[in-house]
Each structure stands twice: as C-alpha cells, then as structure tokens.
Length: 158
Image (cartoon, rainbow, N blue to C red; front, side):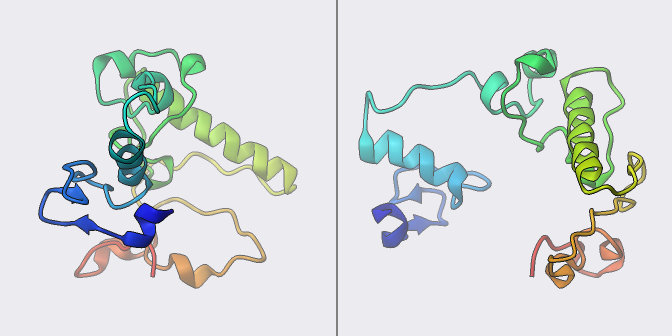
C-alpha cells in the first residue's frame, strides 16, 4: 500500500518512481504497480515469472494464439478484442475460443437469472448488457450505444 499512498507515478516515460517499470499502457493501474512492487520494492527472489500464454494470454503471439483454450488460466482481452465490443475473431484460434468461452459464461449467468439467452453480437455496438435491477445504468452511458457518433468517441466510465 505504501507505493499507492506515495503515488509517485511519472508520465514522462519512467513510470513508478522513475524506475522505468509501468511506463506502458495501463502502467498506472494494477498492470504496472504489481510488477513495480515485485521487481523494485520486494526485489529478486520475491516473484516467479509465469508463462504469459497460460496466465495472461492476450493472443499477441503465434504461440499464444495456438495455445489450447483448456490450458489457458487467464485470458486478457486486448489484442483479441473484448466480446462485448462485438468484434468477433474470424480465425479458428485461441482468440475465437476465448470469446466463445466468455459467451458461455454469460449464458450461464443468464440461466441462473432465468432470463433469455442472448445471441452473440456480430456488429460493433450491437451488444446488450445483462440488465441487473440494482445497477446504475448511467455509469455506463456511452460505452456501447451511440458512442460512435460522439465527437470524442467512446468513453469507458463517467
């Protein structure tokens, strides 16, 4: 917590405390602070580098795209687009398998909630979120519907 309380993240390309750790996309988030903590604060011997195609598969290499989905523990929808963006992979590889697996999980939730099964969206901005009675819909305005017509494009959150 001391790293977060200190808050010394530098946007000049040097990342956390000028260490050059976390200087990439998402570096100021958990994606950068955790590597910084283990590489710099805790130091050598405090971490083990996990196989990326199993524990953070982004589909960014041929090896990761060819990894059987049943061997993947965590799939990171970055290079292979997020299923809710409705940009479905058209190649038979781990990207398509991960997107399909995500839809299977969604259908499991719909079954538990006793609501109709949603069809896989196939056109950008066609996604329909599961309507949870307790959620504040205003938090997600512009994430999908209509954001393509806004001058500044889509926003993730308010």
